Amino acid sequence: MSLRPPPSLGLVLPCYNEAEVLPETARQLMVLLDALQAEGRIASARVYFVDDGSRDATWSLIEELARADPRFSGLKLSRNRGHQNALMAGLATARQDAVISLDADLQDDPNVIGAMVDAYRGGAEIVLGVRDDRTSDSVFKRSTARGYYRFLHGLGVDIVADHADYRLMSARALKALAGYTEVNLFLRALVPQLGFSVATVPYRRAERFAGESKYPLGKMLGFAFEGVTSFSTRPLRLITIIGIAVSSVSFFLALWALVTAVFMRSTVPGWASTVVPIYFICGVQLLCVGIIGEYVGKIYLETKRRPRFIVDRNLDDGADA
Image (tube, rainbow, N blue to C red; front, side):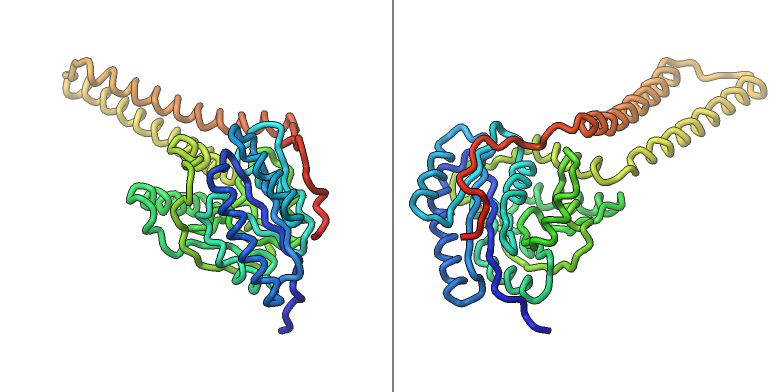
């Protein structure tokens, strides 16, 4: 099969308070892109930094980079909208043949960009960066991540284990992605739904070059729950199963109490036998109401049809360099 011609390549990097690492990120990317262009593997390149409402000097640095090199461009969102929305803003702006999304903190190994481009030229419309080594993670993070992916698969969510948001998408795939207009974004499960040919490239995720993680435990848990409720209705079905199970247990307890009272002429008095079932049933009810509330909340947000992001400033119109 013949290879596609060298593509114009766009890189999209969401940034939130990344002033410490941005100069080094820009330097490494330019070295890599120069090499790929010299080898004839890409025709041209443009880097899009998306400032997601940073409070430090991130935007000033992006402007400096754009003035120094026309291959750099930037978007400044009007306020912090979260990683997924910032990423979507960059993907919606890029107009290259192939666009790669990656983090600005250099944890996503830039050296596999060449392999992604090669896979695209070989016919893949989507190329996923998949971690083949999680030794840099803590034991807790590694075990919870693997458990989470297994949990999602169990709920019927089509997701690739150990893949985050390091991926290449062709212009055709991006056009299809633009048709998904939901407000609650979880791109790592949304992209596989496009159905185009997919290739994977293994890589090892590094430690942050500088700065602090933008995903503490609380945000990670919220993002994880977003993935569950955005792509699976099985928790709602689980509520029905729990309701049937609790009703069955309550029925048999009532039957046991009747048999004890009528035939054995004795009952077991006690506070625990009365209060514990009540607390149990109330806890199940609150859990079910909470799960239903999450889905109702998503319906509420979707029906508003509010924009996912608002661009405050755009340093480039997205034309190819």
